[in-house]
Image 1 (cartoon, one colour):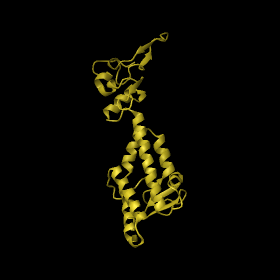
Image 2 (cartoon, one colour; image 1 turned 90 degrees about the horizontal axis):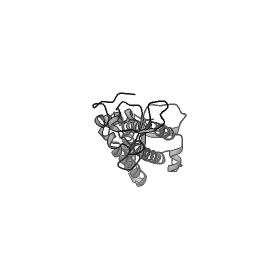
Image 3 (cartoon, one colour; image 1 turned 180 degrees about the vertical axis):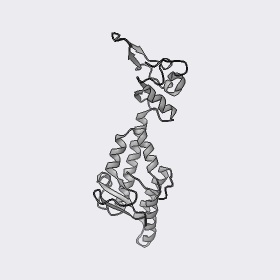
Image 4 (cartoon, helix red, strand yellow; image 1 turned 30 degrees about the horizontal axis):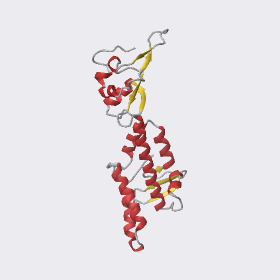
Length: 226
């Protein structure tokens, strides 16, 4: 294995990993072929580059997660969450919120015959056009046009099957991106999208121009790409 020194141990290189070290589960077999006895794996005696698997405990929720020692140390160095369960839960919540947002957009426009649940499951595109900000729902197999596109079912599959924290980073990069490329906090953009749809749905007949303006504002604020 990798030689452990006073400068490359997990305890020195990644103190947060050492703090989350599981007190009972971190045991490995001996180095010799005939040695079947398990020995305790300690942060102070384990190299930060080790490929051995270790167990960590989430201090916030008590989740127990297993990963390679070197991966855990790298995650701490990069400032990433060490609890993959917490990351996956946050990702799933964000995807759920996006599905609701896009379902509302579809219902407010041409897909008024679909319920929110149906809209989130249908293979339907939402495509804000670059010229006038109009949005329209079209079949997934239609000819690809310019603009931001969103396919609920495909987006759900990609996000939930990828590495959770990488998926979260992708969401933050691609959600709430305006047509001019300026990025906004995704939560604020989603709130504006919900508010715009609500305003368009509740406006009286004489306020059609204001409703259209609200929808246009929404399409320029909430742009999701697959």
